[in-house]
Length: 85
Length: 85
Length: 157
Length: 157
Image (tube, rainbow over all chains, first blue to last red; front, side, top):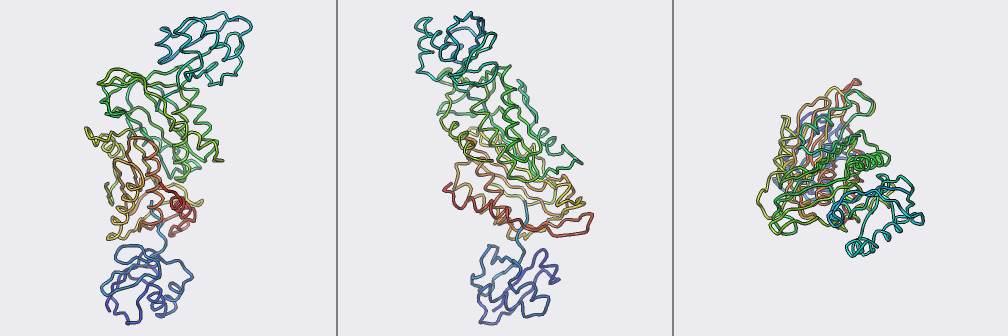
């Protein structure tokens, strides 16, 4: 299934782009699984998504936890803990 | 001993003046005793100072409770609970 | 740490900008400004307010407010505070009081600002008299204000 | 209940006066206005700040802030609220954010304003990057901000 992924702040800088379209294998249906999938892309990605850094996720512009389900067409965003205000 | 008394807000309106100089009998040395002394002045004063209304006191510009001592030269103020802000 | 008692209105934007930009170049850097403005309600206890007149005890007022500011400064790590309180006769929507507090981080300024208001409401010698469609009346002190003050007495700060 | 995300500065005095005088003639009479302004500190963690750059997630930001305002409105009897948050590159002493809340009585406005800030700090998609004398660095999220938010989760409001 196709999803869109967005990266922000230090994660955007680390992966070096801000957005991608991805055709996700059908067995990947949660944020945790997607993080694991991305961590397979190489050392840089493993460092980000191996679970040792806190990376927050939003699906369709709502904060979610790592157990949240991903569906076709979703916009998934990854970012560090927020620091506004 | 001589003291000065000030009245504010509804108490000032009830006694119909805002300040007086008073030569206090020597056995009157606390706020409670002064309130009792004033309550002897007639029905109007009795209504104010018989203890059924909350009347706050300050001595020399500091809020005090009714056990506070009064000394010669003090400025004693009587007023209802404050309502600023 | 400033207290002003005045008949005339104050310029809220100017006062807050002055607080915010004060201390430029000093060791403690202002990151937060919390302010409270109290204004005359158009309706109170169901009646339309024509005017609100504030009486005070001039020799005591500034002393009482300064003591409250000093207590706030002892309890929280704030940079500065300002209290402006008006007296005399005001109309609905007129500003009555401004309390503003600056600090490096927001929690200190929020606490100190609310603390100053809660103590001002219960310890500073001001009295309000309303002229309403039903006649004149002194505003009654509220038990809720005593309760608000008492909260701080069980706090270590 | 207004949210604005903008690059340009805002006029604090004008925004607060508009909040204060809004609702003229309405059933609920504004008696209290509580506001918070966050500004760029000149020093942070011991280093002089040259600039502070705020990135955000445009499609999500307004939705997140509106949700926070709605939650505040459910918890407290407030009349109106305003959030203005700037993005882009700012200098020391520049205003970053304004949260303003009006209510009939002060307790509601104080609580709602602090609640909105505590949730904004932990739930709204903004990220700060500082350019300091030591180079550029992303600002780290603070555990104190999580703790500030959690306080509200054990409150009935």
